[in-house]
Length: 150
Image 1 (cartoon, one colour):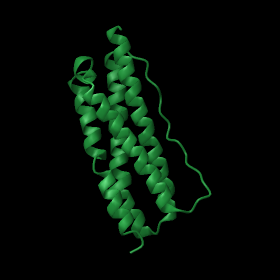
Image 2 (cartoon, rainbow, N blue to C red):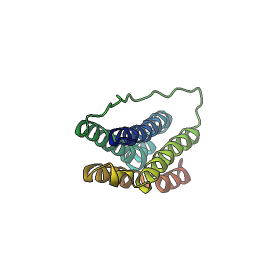
Image 3 (cartoon, helix red, strand yellow):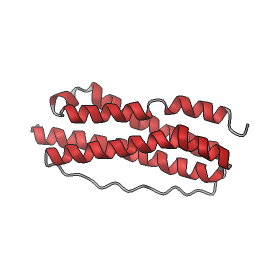
């Protein structure tokens, strides 16, 4: 397999993680609309904010890597999330599941060694930065849900 093909595969895998983070943001957005103002502020600070920053960092890392190696890059659009449900916890669970999936994709990618062999220092730093931003979201979500409505 040619280096370009492996790098394109790396890029595509990063794109999958970005899609998962976008799904998480959409679910957090719906949850936000269902909360009172105080809880909205907490959601923004503890959950949505870190994922939004991770999403932005992942997109920048993706775009920069694609440009450096002249790879075919996708464009990402923020998905909408609509549902008749009014269950905040359901949307929070969906968001956390997507964040977990994104993190698992990135962990697998980093553990594969491809980011070392076919990537570069900027790619590795970008992916590590994304993981650092989203890595505490599961723990923060447990605390958020535990104290929801108090």
